[in-house]
Length: 266
Image 1 (cartoon, rainbow, N blue to C red):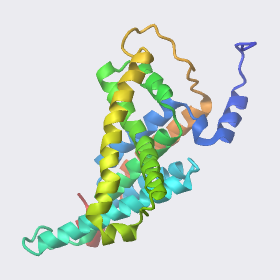
Image 2 (image 1 turned 180 degrees about the vertical axis):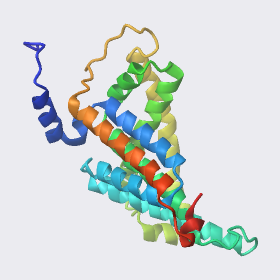
Image 3 (image 1 turned 45 degrees about the horizontal axis):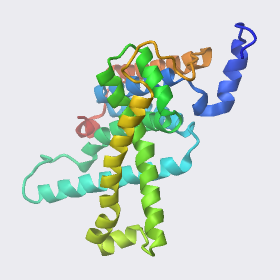
């Protein structure tokens, strides 16, 4: 039990820095995630996107999960390769790019990477109950904050399901690798994606049961198991990202992009 209501703000500030990303208040992470994502969509200058991307990358590395970052960026590179290959095939029949370089895909993919960088810390360092409590504290309706919480928690749950499926295939002597996908893509797709489909269906049922057991939507007087604590350190991080977003917009307004890079804008 807390002995006193007097709390030393400096102690909380230092404690949150030692805990890393998991010590940051969920509301601060949500504000940073949604604010940065909206700014990434609104900004079109490649210089401003670089500023936003660099800040989000530092924020993501603060999560201290290098394996998750590596796998995520490998997936992004794979998507970029598929997009470039698809455009190449389309251009064989129709001049879709109209003479522009394939580097015109840079800004759209920078937007995607920036959103991923701010979403991963929220998804991997926050439990579902804290996310629901934080979203509810913003006085959002039930039909908004439940889907948002589900989408945020989908990423770690999806990675966990993939790991379990790969481990179960390994016990049967089936190796899952890039080489096996190239050798027999249909068979590996059947081994991997079909179990993922059924696990997703089961997860939806488990989510409904969990929401009912937590009393979500039944009463506004239900108290959370753990209260949220928005401290000076959280406010400092939010202000830093607000300054970065403002700086990105100022870069877009005042720094002119050379003619050679104009095709990168979208």
